[in-house]
Image (cartoon, rainbow, N blue to C red; front, side):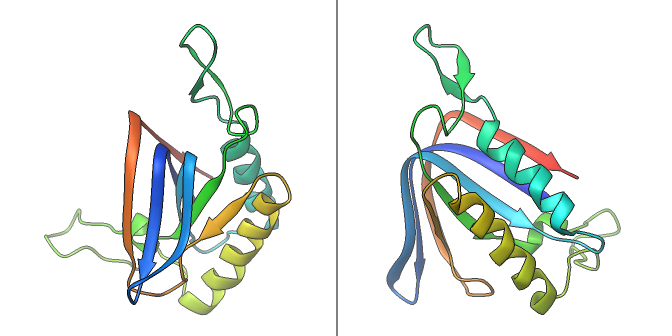
Length: 144
Protein backbone atom coordinates (compact mmCIF):
# COMPACT_ATOMS: atom_id res chain seq x y z
CA UNK A 1 0.00 0.00 0.00
CA UNK A 2 1.25 3.43 -0.93
CA UNK A 3 -0.11 6.70 0.37
CA UNK A 4 0.94 10.14 -0.82
CA UNK A 5 -0.01 12.75 1.80
CA UNK A 6 -0.15 16.42 0.88
CA UNK A 7 -0.94 19.18 3.34
CA UNK A 8 -3.48 21.40 1.66
CA UNK A 9 -5.24 24.69 2.09
CA UNK A 10 -8.09 23.31 0.01
CA UNK A 11 -8.72 20.30 -2.20
CA UNK A 12 -11.58 19.19 -4.40
CA UNK A 13 -12.52 16.24 -6.60
CA UNK A 14 -14.88 16.69 -9.55
CA UNK A 15 -16.46 13.77 -11.40
CA UNK A 16 -18.77 14.34 -14.39
CA UNK A 17 -18.99 18.05 -13.59
CA UNK A 18 -19.99 17.59 -9.94
CA UNK A 19 -17.98 17.88 -6.74
CA UNK A 20 -17.76 14.50 -4.98
CA UNK A 21 -15.44 15.52 -2.18
CA UNK A 22 -13.49 18.43 -0.76
CA UNK A 23 -11.46 19.43 2.24
CA UNK A 24 -10.17 22.66 3.71
CA UNK A 25 -7.03 23.09 5.81
CA UNK A 26 -6.28 19.38 5.94
CA UNK A 27 -4.78 16.58 3.90
CA UNK A 28 -5.16 15.36 0.34
CA UNK A 29 -4.40 11.64 0.55
CA UNK A 30 -3.75 9.65 -2.63
CA UNK A 31 -4.03 5.89 -2.02
CA UNK A 32 -2.86 2.87 -4.02
CA UNK A 33 -2.93 -0.86 -3.23
CA UNK A 34 -0.89 -3.89 -4.22
CA UNK A 35 -0.91 -7.66 -3.60
CA UNK A 36 -0.54 -8.55 0.06
CA UNK A 37 -2.25 -5.45 1.40
CA UNK A 38 -4.59 -6.30 4.25
CA UNK A 39 -6.24 -4.93 7.40
CA UNK A 40 -2.93 -4.79 9.27
CA UNK A 41 -1.32 -2.68 6.55
CA UNK A 42 -4.36 -0.40 6.41
CA UNK A 43 -4.38 0.06 10.21
CA UNK A 44 -0.68 0.93 10.18
CA UNK A 45 -1.05 3.53 7.42
CA UNK A 46 -4.22 5.05 8.88
CA UNK A 47 -2.29 5.65 12.12
CA UNK A 48 0.64 7.13 10.19
CA UNK A 49 -1.59 9.49 8.20
CA UNK A 50 -3.57 10.84 11.13
CA UNK A 51 -0.55 11.22 13.44
CA UNK A 52 1.83 12.62 10.81
CA UNK A 53 3.12 15.88 12.30
CA UNK A 54 3.18 18.20 9.30
CA UNK A 55 1.10 21.14 10.56
CA UNK A 56 2.77 24.10 12.27
CA UNK A 57 2.62 24.67 16.01
CA UNK A 58 2.62 28.09 17.71
CA UNK A 59 6.29 28.53 16.78
CA UNK A 60 5.84 27.63 13.11
CA UNK A 61 7.45 24.22 13.57
CA UNK A 62 5.75 21.26 11.86
CA UNK A 63 4.76 19.57 15.09
CA UNK A 64 0.99 19.01 14.86
CA UNK A 65 -1.12 16.35 13.19
CA UNK A 66 -4.41 16.64 11.30
CA UNK A 67 -6.05 15.51 14.57
CA UNK A 68 -4.35 18.29 16.53
CA UNK A 69 -5.52 21.02 14.15
CA UNK A 70 -9.06 19.66 13.68
CA UNK A 71 -8.46 19.20 9.97
CA UNK A 72 -10.14 16.93 7.45
CA UNK A 73 -9.01 14.54 4.72
CA UNK A 74 -9.84 14.20 1.05
CA UNK A 75 -9.03 10.60 0.09
CA UNK A 76 -8.55 9.74 -3.59
CA UNK A 77 -7.88 6.29 -5.03
CA UNK A 78 -4.78 6.34 -7.23
CA UNK A 79 -3.64 3.06 -8.81
CA UNK A 80 -0.97 4.98 -10.74
CA UNK A 81 1.06 5.22 -7.52
CA UNK A 82 2.19 1.74 -8.58
CA UNK A 83 3.24 2.86 -12.06
CA UNK A 84 6.68 1.56 -13.01
CA UNK A 85 8.44 3.33 -15.89
CA UNK A 86 11.90 1.80 -15.42
CA UNK A 87 11.61 -0.21 -18.64
CA UNK A 88 10.47 2.46 -21.06
CA UNK A 89 8.22 5.46 -21.37
CA UNK A 90 4.90 3.69 -20.88
CA UNK A 91 4.44 2.83 -17.21
CA UNK A 92 3.46 -0.68 -16.22
CA UNK A 93 0.75 -1.01 -13.59
CA UNK A 94 1.27 -4.73 -12.97
CA UNK A 95 1.95 -4.16 -9.26
CA UNK A 96 -1.33 -2.27 -8.74
CA UNK A 97 -4.03 -4.40 -7.18
CA UNK A 98 -7.00 -5.33 -9.41
CA UNK A 99 -9.85 -2.84 -9.19
CA UNK A 100 -12.45 -5.01 -7.47
CA UNK A 101 -10.00 -6.03 -4.74
CA UNK A 102 -8.57 -2.52 -4.36
CA UNK A 103 -12.08 -1.03 -3.99
CA UNK A 104 -12.73 -3.20 -0.94
CA UNK A 105 -9.47 -2.09 0.68
CA UNK A 106 -10.07 1.56 -0.24
CA UNK A 107 -13.49 1.44 1.43
CA UNK A 108 -11.95 -0.10 4.58
CA UNK A 109 -9.18 2.53 4.60
CA UNK A 110 -11.72 5.37 4.38
CA UNK A 111 -14.01 3.84 7.01
CA UNK A 112 -11.11 3.61 9.46
CA UNK A 113 -10.09 7.22 8.76
CA UNK A 114 -13.70 8.36 9.25
CA UNK A 115 -13.65 6.91 12.76
CA UNK A 116 -11.05 9.57 13.61
CA UNK A 117 -11.41 12.59 11.31
CA UNK A 118 -13.88 14.00 8.77
CA UNK A 119 -13.22 12.35 5.38
CA UNK A 120 -14.57 12.98 1.91
CA UNK A 121 -13.58 10.98 -1.16
CA UNK A 122 -13.34 10.83 -4.88
CA UNK A 123 -15.14 8.10 -6.82
CA UNK A 124 -13.21 4.84 -7.07
CA UNK A 125 -12.33 4.02 -10.67
CA UNK A 126 -13.76 7.26 -12.08
CA UNK A 127 -11.96 9.77 -14.24
CA UNK A 128 -11.48 12.53 -11.66
CA UNK A 129 -10.33 16.13 -11.76
CA UNK A 130 -8.42 16.83 -8.56
CA UNK A 131 -7.46 20.38 -7.67
CA UNK A 132 -5.71 21.54 -4.53
CA UNK A 133 -3.41 24.10 -3.01
CA UNK A 134 -0.41 22.38 -1.43
CA UNK A 135 0.78 24.25 1.67
CA UNK A 136 4.54 24.39 2.18
CA UNK A 137 4.66 22.56 -0.18
CA UNK A 138 4.47 19.59 2.15
CA UNK A 139 4.28 16.15 0.53
CA UNK A 140 5.06 12.89 2.35
CA UNK A 141 5.29 9.39 0.85
CA UNK A 142 4.15 6.54 3.10
CA UNK A 143 4.41 2.88 2.22
CA UNK A 144 4.19 -0.50 3.82
